[in-house]
Image (tube, rainbow, N blue to C red; front, side):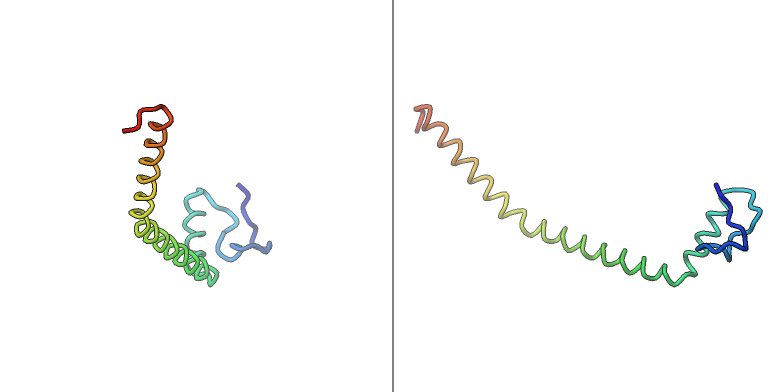
Length: 91
């Protein structure tokens, strides 16, 4: 792992010290920077948008599951009937 020097420009140059002992401290500092940074707000907004889209898609699937199931059941019945007819076992 490369430690960013204070003279270098990087996304965490103001919060990452030059001498760090454990990766856990780096994670805490990165999380602190993430929560302070304005760019984090955009990430949260995109995550919320993605969540709302996911909920909408789930609701759509629940709404159309019964009609799609009915179509497949009808198709299966017709296929069985056609297969029985082709074999000469039509009832």
